[in-house]
Image (cartoon, rainbow, N blue to C red):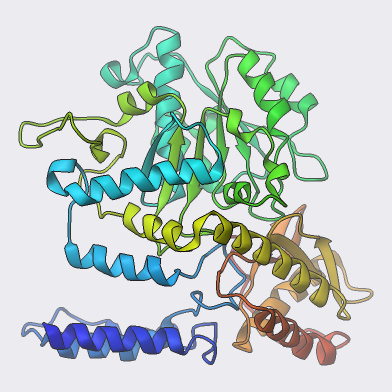
Length: 477
């Protein structure tokens, strides 16, 4: 076992040490990966050493270098050193962090991490919290609490009686919402037809006038989901005014702050989230701007009773405790890793000042990438960053909008093919665009220069030439 662990450690170190030199994009084809990994289940097993060696050798070319500083596609952090090391310990300890009795240290560390998160983000200190598998489950946990509270107000106990025959719930949310909000609504049995989409203004925000019209029907239990930085341009809704309006109408306000909520840690950018603390629940991801490894969402809920009612359960073989916090009272899982431990480690390493510096640095890098590429021939800035998200489009004189959509997708793929940077495509206001997202603690000024140089190498000789490659459409993410 020690030999296999040593091999894994050396492979992990080699991976991290090579992030600056390797291609950011995966280089193995689908067929390459199938040749390496597909096939029937072996009858005879292999040694642990052989398995680890094969994994490290064959999987590496099929992995993106998103842990490095030149990955700007989806909002993915890079794993702070302390958080990554803590995650290794979590896997080694192999604790089921579901109740205090099954892992006392995990329970105490997670409780501390949750309190620190509320302090860092300046959210209500008496709010409850849960560490979930990602923002998807943080939304579901938060909206389950909202469902319990809203139906309780009209005399319905959803935990006991279910949804058959229950009063209907409607969900007001931005036309720039993330798809995970829709999935949470589906998972909770509310259904997509309950979603009332609110049209956003030119800045990507819900206007008070639009919300006022939607709130005119105050007889139906209502959830309002607002954006603390949407995924395309980082737009933040006018929380103070909108939340006050929603509460006056009896609505529950939930905040999708998957990455943007961490801007509260910055004195430079926290004004963009003024009033967000007045909401009823918040969802964010630790594996985005906090830069902990994947599998870490965070739900924070002001109504502790509704949260606990929606999540808690008991069994004779699970010993609850009255002296410490049991995670299963607040989480949707029973079997779960101690995902709050890497959060504790990251916050311990960064401190308040380190988190602020990380936010400010990422925002500056995003602005420099957008401006630098935006100056190139054929590039157009669709949205300058107000936070850490920006949009670019690529166009040629005389081309139709559809042709420029195709040219934009092709340009993104050509930039990614250089291995020097990695971006993703999106559709915004009916145009294909390249999204620039910066949340990685490793991103440096040199990484910014390399990304701009990669775009320059693609655009300068190509901008006036006809599209010569057939490229598969990029997925919206």
